[in-house]
Image (cartoon, rainbow, N blue to C red; front, side, top):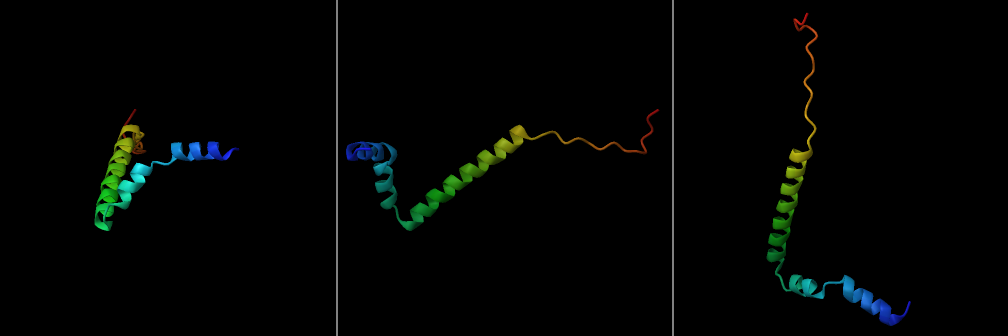
Length: 67
């Protein structure tokens, strides 16, 4: 693989603007950003579980009066 190809691939796979932006944040701002992202992920997980939850089957009472 040529050096030029490696350089092109790395340009396409690394978002330098995002890195620069995050490096300019204070530690507090980074924590706030992390917390917001975590809350989003937890909400998505909660919605996923609600959407795809299997219905709970109710156990039959062996003493029921069905005839």
